[in-house]
Image: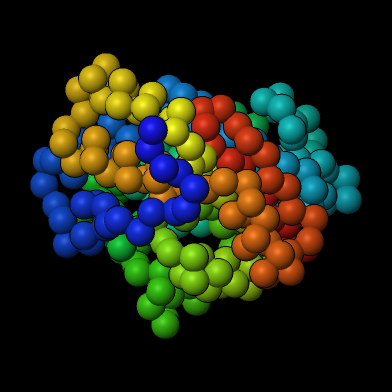
Length: 256
Protein backbone atom coordinates (compact mmCIF):
# COMPACT_ATOMS: atom_id res chain seq x y z
CA UNK A 1 0.00 0.00 0.00
CA UNK A 2 1.14 3.50 -0.82
CA UNK A 3 2.19 5.57 2.21
CA UNK A 4 -0.02 8.67 2.52
CA UNK A 5 0.90 9.72 6.06
CA UNK A 6 2.82 12.78 4.92
CA UNK A 7 2.48 15.17 2.00
CA UNK A 8 4.79 14.32 -0.87
CA UNK A 9 7.25 16.93 -2.15
CA UNK A 10 7.76 15.22 -5.51
CA UNK A 11 7.55 17.71 -8.41
CA UNK A 12 4.87 17.48 -11.07
CA UNK A 13 5.73 17.78 -14.75
CA UNK A 14 3.05 20.46 -15.07
CA UNK A 15 4.90 22.60 -12.52
CA UNK A 16 7.27 23.58 -15.33
CA UNK A 17 5.70 26.92 -16.27
CA UNK A 18 7.54 27.07 -19.61
CA UNK A 19 5.87 23.88 -20.81
CA UNK A 20 3.60 24.10 -23.86
CA UNK A 21 2.17 22.04 -26.72
CA UNK A 22 -0.43 19.39 -27.38
CA UNK A 23 0.56 17.17 -24.44
CA UNK A 24 -0.12 19.99 -21.98
CA UNK A 25 -3.32 20.98 -23.80
CA UNK A 26 -4.56 17.39 -23.69
CA UNK A 27 -3.68 17.13 -19.98
CA UNK A 28 -5.51 20.38 -19.12
CA UNK A 29 -8.65 19.31 -20.98
CA UNK A 30 -8.63 15.78 -19.57
CA UNK A 31 -8.22 17.10 -16.01
CA UNK A 32 -11.13 19.49 -16.55
CA UNK A 33 -13.25 16.71 -18.04
CA UNK A 34 -12.61 14.30 -15.18
CA UNK A 35 -13.23 17.04 -12.61
CA UNK A 36 -16.56 17.86 -14.26
CA UNK A 37 -17.57 14.20 -14.49
CA UNK A 38 -16.82 13.60 -10.80
CA UNK A 39 -18.68 16.72 -9.68
CA UNK A 40 -15.65 18.78 -8.72
CA UNK A 41 -16.95 22.00 -10.27
CA UNK A 42 -20.13 21.70 -8.20
CA UNK A 43 -18.02 21.71 -5.03
CA UNK A 44 -16.49 25.08 -5.90
CA UNK A 45 -19.78 26.52 -7.14
CA UNK A 46 -21.49 25.49 -3.89
CA UNK A 47 -18.76 27.33 -1.98
CA UNK A 48 -19.33 30.50 -3.99
CA UNK A 49 -23.09 30.32 -3.32
CA UNK A 50 -22.44 29.86 0.39
CA UNK A 51 -20.19 32.92 0.57
CA UNK A 52 -22.71 35.03 -1.34
CA UNK A 53 -25.47 34.01 1.03
CA UNK A 54 -23.19 34.53 4.02
CA UNK A 55 -22.34 38.04 2.91
CA UNK A 56 -25.94 39.24 2.32
CA UNK A 57 -24.68 41.68 -0.26
CA UNK A 58 -27.81 43.83 -0.29
CA UNK A 59 -30.36 44.43 2.43
CA UNK A 60 -33.26 43.45 0.19
CA UNK A 61 -31.52 40.86 -1.96
CA UNK A 62 -30.26 37.53 -0.72
CA UNK A 63 -28.16 35.85 -3.43
CA UNK A 64 -29.72 32.52 -4.42
CA UNK A 65 -28.67 29.24 -2.89
CA UNK A 66 -30.44 27.36 -5.67
CA UNK A 67 -30.66 27.66 -9.44
CA UNK A 68 -33.92 29.62 -9.27
CA UNK A 69 -33.68 33.06 -10.98
CA UNK A 70 -34.29 36.19 -8.96
CA UNK A 71 -37.51 38.19 -9.39
CA UNK A 72 -37.06 40.81 -12.10
CA UNK A 73 -37.74 43.72 -9.75
CA UNK A 74 -34.67 42.87 -7.66
CA UNK A 75 -32.16 42.14 -10.42
CA UNK A 76 -31.00 45.74 -10.79
CA UNK A 77 -30.12 45.93 -7.09
CA UNK A 78 -27.33 43.35 -7.26
CA UNK A 79 -23.86 44.79 -7.68
CA UNK A 80 -21.06 43.23 -9.68
CA UNK A 81 -19.24 40.37 -7.94
CA UNK A 82 -15.55 40.00 -8.75
CA UNK A 83 -14.14 36.46 -8.59
CA UNK A 84 -10.52 35.42 -9.07
CA UNK A 85 -9.59 31.82 -9.96
CA UNK A 86 -5.97 31.10 -9.00
CA UNK A 87 -4.41 28.37 -11.13
CA UNK A 88 -7.31 28.48 -13.54
CA UNK A 89 -6.13 25.74 -15.93
CA UNK A 90 -8.23 25.72 -19.10
CA UNK A 91 -10.80 28.03 -17.48
CA UNK A 92 -13.57 25.47 -17.06
CA UNK A 93 -14.49 26.67 -13.56
CA UNK A 94 -14.88 30.26 -14.73
CA UNK A 95 -17.13 29.17 -17.58
CA UNK A 96 -19.30 27.26 -15.10
CA UNK A 97 -19.57 30.41 -12.99
CA UNK A 98 -20.39 32.55 -16.03
CA UNK A 99 -23.21 30.17 -16.98
CA UNK A 100 -24.53 30.18 -13.41
CA UNK A 101 -24.50 33.99 -13.29
CA UNK A 102 -26.32 34.26 -16.61
CA UNK A 103 -28.98 31.77 -15.53
CA UNK A 104 -29.57 33.54 -12.22
CA UNK A 105 -29.33 37.13 -13.49
CA UNK A 106 -26.20 37.85 -11.48
CA UNK A 107 -23.33 40.09 -12.53
CA UNK A 108 -19.98 38.32 -12.21
CA UNK A 109 -16.61 39.74 -13.22
CA UNK A 110 -14.42 36.66 -13.60
CA UNK A 111 -10.61 36.60 -13.76
CA UNK A 112 -8.33 33.61 -14.16
CA UNK A 113 -4.60 33.59 -13.51
CA UNK A 114 -1.98 30.94 -14.18
CA UNK A 115 1.81 31.04 -14.31
CA UNK A 116 1.95 29.19 -17.64
CA UNK A 117 1.51 31.43 -20.70
CA UNK A 118 0.41 28.54 -22.94
CA UNK A 119 -2.27 27.56 -20.43
CA UNK A 120 -3.60 31.12 -20.36
CA UNK A 121 -3.76 31.29 -24.17
CA UNK A 122 -5.63 27.98 -24.28
CA UNK A 123 -8.10 29.12 -21.60
CA UNK A 124 -8.64 32.41 -23.44
CA UNK A 125 -9.47 30.59 -26.68
CA UNK A 126 -11.97 28.33 -24.94
CA UNK A 127 -13.60 31.35 -23.23
CA UNK A 128 -13.72 33.69 -26.23
CA UNK A 129 -17.54 33.76 -26.18
CA UNK A 130 -17.68 34.99 -22.56
CA UNK A 131 -17.40 38.77 -22.24
CA UNK A 132 -17.14 38.69 -18.44
CA UNK A 133 -14.11 36.36 -18.32
CA UNK A 134 -10.52 37.59 -18.60
CA UNK A 135 -7.15 35.92 -18.07
CA UNK A 136 -3.67 36.95 -17.05
CA UNK A 137 -0.38 35.08 -17.01
CA UNK A 138 0.86 35.73 -13.50
CA UNK A 139 3.08 34.10 -10.90
CA UNK A 140 1.12 34.45 -7.67
CA UNK A 141 4.35 34.78 -5.68
CA UNK A 142 5.59 37.80 -7.63
CA UNK A 143 5.79 40.88 -5.47
CA UNK A 144 3.54 42.81 -7.85
CA UNK A 145 0.90 40.07 -8.01
CA UNK A 146 -2.70 40.70 -6.93
CA UNK A 147 -2.66 44.47 -6.75
CA UNK A 148 -6.45 44.44 -6.94
CA UNK A 149 -8.94 43.12 -4.40
CA UNK A 150 -11.67 40.65 -5.29
CA UNK A 151 -14.91 39.65 -3.63
CA UNK A 152 -14.10 35.93 -3.78
CA UNK A 153 -10.86 34.06 -4.48
CA UNK A 154 -11.01 30.47 -5.72
CA UNK A 155 -8.33 27.83 -5.59
CA UNK A 156 -9.55 24.65 -7.30
CA UNK A 157 -7.11 21.72 -7.51
CA UNK A 158 -4.22 24.17 -7.17
CA UNK A 159 -3.26 24.45 -3.50
CA UNK A 160 -1.64 20.99 -3.44
CA UNK A 161 1.03 22.22 -5.88
CA UNK A 162 2.62 24.21 -3.04
CA UNK A 163 4.65 23.26 0.01
CA UNK A 164 3.34 24.04 3.49
CA UNK A 165 5.23 27.34 4.02
CA UNK A 166 4.09 28.52 0.58
CA UNK A 167 0.49 27.61 1.43
CA UNK A 168 0.62 29.72 4.58
CA UNK A 169 2.05 32.63 2.60
CA UNK A 170 -0.54 32.19 -0.14
CA UNK A 171 -3.50 32.05 2.25
CA UNK A 172 -2.21 35.18 3.98
CA UNK A 173 -2.31 36.98 0.62
CA UNK A 174 -5.75 35.59 -0.21
CA UNK A 175 -7.17 36.72 3.11
CA UNK A 176 -5.92 40.27 2.52
CA UNK A 177 -7.26 40.41 -1.04
CA UNK A 178 -10.68 38.71 -0.67
CA UNK A 179 -13.53 40.94 0.54
CA UNK A 180 -16.01 38.12 1.13
CA UNK A 181 -13.99 34.96 1.33
CA UNK A 182 -11.96 32.13 -0.14
CA UNK A 183 -13.12 28.80 -1.59
CA UNK A 184 -10.58 25.99 -1.74
CA UNK A 185 -11.39 22.71 -3.48
CA UNK A 186 -8.59 20.17 -3.39
CA UNK A 187 -7.69 16.51 -3.21
CA UNK A 188 -7.83 14.16 -0.25
CA UNK A 189 -4.54 12.35 0.33
CA UNK A 190 -5.51 8.71 0.68
CA UNK A 191 -4.67 5.29 -0.75
CA UNK A 192 -8.23 4.74 -2.05
CA UNK A 193 -8.28 7.66 -4.55
CA UNK A 194 -4.68 6.85 -5.49
CA UNK A 195 -5.58 3.39 -6.72
CA UNK A 196 -8.90 4.48 -8.18
CA UNK A 197 -7.06 7.09 -10.24
CA UNK A 198 -4.88 4.35 -11.73
CA UNK A 199 -8.08 2.74 -13.01
CA UNK A 200 -9.32 6.10 -14.36
CA UNK A 201 -6.10 6.44 -16.34
CA UNK A 202 -7.04 3.38 -18.37
CA UNK A 203 -10.68 4.42 -18.81
CA UNK A 204 -9.84 7.93 -20.04
CA UNK A 205 -6.60 6.94 -21.81
CA UNK A 206 -4.63 9.61 -20.03
CA UNK A 207 -1.19 10.43 -21.40
CA UNK A 208 1.91 9.68 -19.35
CA UNK A 209 2.18 13.20 -17.95
CA UNK A 210 -1.44 13.26 -16.82
CA UNK A 211 -1.08 9.86 -15.16
CA UNK A 212 2.17 10.66 -13.35
CA UNK A 213 1.09 14.14 -12.31
CA UNK A 214 -2.32 12.89 -11.18
CA UNK A 215 -0.82 10.30 -8.85
CA UNK A 216 1.67 12.81 -7.44
CA UNK A 217 -1.18 15.32 -6.99
CA UNK A 218 -3.01 12.87 -4.75
CA UNK A 219 0.14 12.28 -2.71
CA UNK A 220 0.55 16.06 -2.40
CA UNK A 221 -3.09 16.43 -1.40
CA UNK A 222 -4.46 16.89 2.10
CA UNK A 223 -5.91 15.20 5.11
CA UNK A 224 -8.36 17.10 7.28
CA UNK A 225 -5.73 17.63 9.96
CA UNK A 226 -3.48 19.41 7.43
CA UNK A 227 -6.17 21.97 6.67
CA UNK A 228 -7.00 22.34 10.35
CA UNK A 229 -3.33 22.97 11.08
CA UNK A 230 -3.16 25.72 8.44
CA UNK A 231 -6.35 27.22 9.85
CA UNK A 232 -4.97 27.24 13.40
CA UNK A 233 -1.64 28.67 12.28
CA UNK A 234 -3.39 31.54 10.50
CA UNK A 235 -5.93 31.99 13.33
CA UNK A 236 -8.84 31.70 10.91
CA UNK A 237 -12.38 31.89 12.28
CA UNK A 238 -15.74 30.62 10.99
CA UNK A 239 -14.06 28.33 8.47
CA UNK A 240 -15.75 25.23 7.11
CA UNK A 241 -13.88 22.07 6.09
CA UNK A 242 -16.06 19.41 4.47
CA UNK A 243 -15.21 16.14 2.75
CA UNK A 244 -16.83 15.90 -0.66
CA UNK A 245 -17.10 13.33 -3.39
CA UNK A 246 -14.88 12.44 -5.19
CA UNK A 247 -12.22 12.32 -2.47
CA UNK A 248 -11.65 16.01 -1.98
CA UNK A 249 -12.12 18.73 0.60
CA UNK A 250 -14.14 21.91 0.31
CA UNK A 251 -12.61 24.58 2.52
CA UNK A 252 -14.57 27.82 2.84
CA UNK A 253 -12.89 30.78 4.55
CA UNK A 254 -15.09 33.87 5.08
CA UNK A 255 -13.15 37.12 5.34
CA UNK A 256 -15.92 39.49 6.41
